Structures are given as structure tokens and as C-alpha cells.
Image (cartoon, rainbow, N blue to C red; front, top):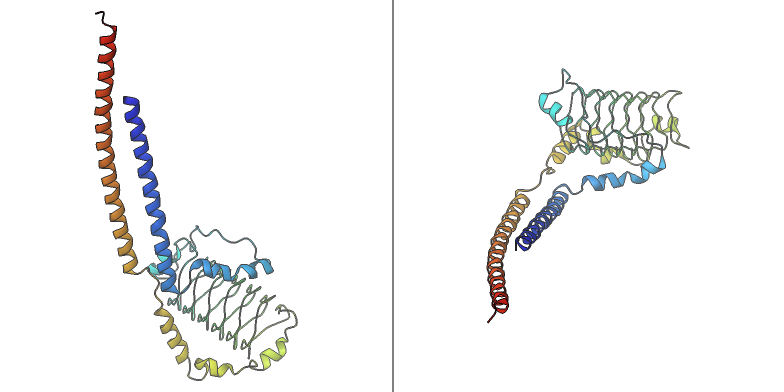
Length: 310
């Protein structure tokens, strides 16, 4: 009898574990789906955009995503930003105002900085390998020795940005504004510079350009298309830059309250179901134990009667 009881208890425990696992797995897709709706894209989608570029060129060993990305507090770095930059990466920094910050040596590997404002910041030696920086503003920033391999800098503002000895291998700079940027010693092997504005940019004999790229012509003249029409900031003193930054700040970066509420309700329903299942299972075990006990006693009585001499 005890063996049957403990077998029943083992089955009950296994049932609870399976149900709990199912509830957890059902909650995660809801969060992922809602997040993708809110952001318009996910971290996985951003990573997939760079897969082909990563295979095309030597990217080197990527930093571990789980390590702290910023190891020492700096005088011009706010405490709040210091905490954010020490979270496990890749980081989601879409539309964030990081202007005039000291980010020397920060590890922003594959971070999403779409539309972020890094104007005037010190990015010396920063790791931006594979980062998403579409429409980001790095004007007047110091990004010497920065590692921007396979980074997406499409339509980014890099006016008067110092990129001396920066690693821009296989980076995307389509439509980027590099007017007056310092590219001395920078490596742009395999970079895409379609419609990029390099007028007034500085470079030297150590600057490595993509194969077949005419640097002298690009620096002397604006891009083929009318970049001024597509970049209002060139004609209005940066007002278009600020408007674009404000627009990107409106992009939601958190899971909606409705998704969280739905997950909580689902958890409550599953929890009540588990409680009812446990109660029913215990009642069944008690009933079965009593019935089996009565049958066993009847069998023993019958055997004793048969063995008793008449």
C-alpha cells in the first residue's frame, strides 16, 4: 500500500514540474512578441543584419557580452550612466542622450545606439564592434582608436569627428555626414561609403580606403546626390539634428503594461489550476488507499476462512 502511495506522489511532483515549465515557456514568447512590436525590431534582428558583414571581414575576437562594459567611474560620467553601462551587453541605448560624456574604453559591443546623441563625447578606444548606430549623432566627438568594425553608421552625423587610427573595417557609412572629420590613420577597408559626405575631411598616407574609392574626389566635392536636401541640419545649423534626436527618443524601450498584466493573469490561472489539480490528486490517493485497503482486508478474511478447518 505504501509503495502505491509514494508512486502516486512521484507522479504528482512530475506533473507540477511539467506544468510550471509550460507556464514559463508560454510567458516568454508573449514578452518577446510585445517587445518586438514596441521597438520595431529586436536585438536578434539587429544581430542578423551584421552576420553577412562579419563573415565578409576579419572581425577579431568579440568581447564577452556578459562582462561589465565600463570598469571605472570617470569625472564626467554621471552615476546613472555608469550603472547603465555596467549592465550585461549588448545594451539597448536607442535615442539616449550621451553627449559630452567621458566614455573612454567603454565596451559597447553590438549595442543599439540608433538615434543616440554622442555629440562632443570622448570615445577614445571605445569598442563599438557590430553596433547599431543608424542616425546617431557623433559630431565633434573624439573617437580616436575606436573599434567600429561592422558597425552600422548609416545616415549618422560625424561632422568634425576625430577618427584617427579608428577601425572602420566593413562598417556601413551610407549617407553618413563626415564633413570635416579627421580620418588620419583610419582603416576603412571594405566600408560602404555610398552617398557619404566627406567634404573637407582630413586623411593621410596611413588612411586605408575601400578598394577603388577615390578619396581625393570625395573629399574635394560633396556626394553625388543632394545630401543637403536629405539632411536639414546642414542648412539650419543643426536644428534638424535635434529634431531627429527628439523623434528617436519617442521610440518605446520597455515592455508594455498590457503584456505584463496578461502574463500575470496567465500565471494566476495556471497557479489556480495547479492547486486544484493537487487537491484532486490527494483526494484520489486517499480514496484509492481506502478502497485498496478494504479490498485487501476482504481478501485476507476470505483466505482465513478458507484456511480455517470446518
